[in-house]
Amino acid sequence: MTQVIEKIDNEIYNLEKVFIPTMGALHDGHISLINDAKKLNLPIVVSIFVNPKQFNDKNDFKNYPRNIINDIEILTSLQVDFVLTPKSDYVYERNKYSKISSGHIGTLFEGKFRPGHFDGVLTVVKRLFEIVNPNTAIFGAKDAQQLFLIKQMVKDHNLKITILEGSTVREKNGLAMSSRNQLLSNTGKEQAKKIYQNLLYVSKLFLKTKDFSFAIEEGLEKYKASNLKVDYLEVVNKETFNIPDENTKELLFLTAAYVDNIRLIDNLKVEL
Image (tube, rainbow, N blue to C red; front, side, top):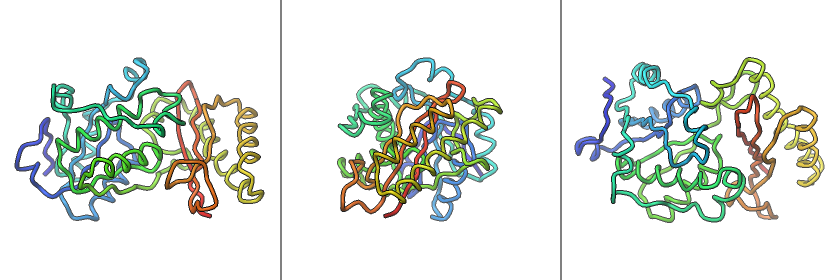
C-alpha cells in the first residue's frame, strides 16, 4: 500500500531503499524509472518537489506544470511504497543544508543559459539524499548534464549511494518525454519532433565525415530552416563532459531549443 508522507521518519530512513526524485507532472519517462527501480526488489521512495532554487526565471517556476493529485494516483497504481511530498521549509530547513557548487561544467551548456540552475539542482538533490538516506537513486538520461554533475557530486562528497541511469523515453514522433511537453500545443508537439530529428541528422553526418564542427554547423543551419530558436547544439565526451579527444569512447550530442516559447532539451549518445 502506498503511503503519502510529508516527512521521512526514522523507520523509513533506516530502510534499505531506492529513491527517485521528481518535480511531479509525471509521464512515461518517470514510469520507466519506477519500473527500473522495481527490478531491485527494494522499497521505493518517489519525491515530488518543485525546487525553487533551480529556476533562474520566476515565470518558469510559476508556470511549471503541477498536478499532485494525478501524480499520487499514478504512483499509487504503480504500488510505489512511499510518495514524499515535502514542504519547502522541510527541505530547506535553516542550518540543515548547504549550497552546492556545480563548478565549471555547471556553467556550460544548460548552465550558460540558466545561470545557477545546476547549483540549485545539486543543492536539492544532496538535501533530499540526506532526508531520504537511499542506497540507490535513479535519474533519467534526458537530463544528461544534470546526471553527470550528480554522479560527480556523489563522488566528490563520498556519498554511499549508487546512481543508476534510466533510458530516455520518447513519444511516437521521437520527442523526448518531459513534463514541459504538457505545455505544448498539438502543433508545437509536431514541431518539437524536429529537435530529435536534428540530433539524428548531426550524429549521422559526424559518423560519415568525422568532422564535429561541420556536423554541428549543418545542424544549426537545419534548425534555422525549421524556424526553431536554438540555445545550443554541442558535442562532448560523455564520461568527462569535455571536448572529445582521441580517448573518447562515447559522444553526447546536446541541444536546447524553443517550441511555443517552451524550452526543451535533448541529447543523443553515439558510441565510437
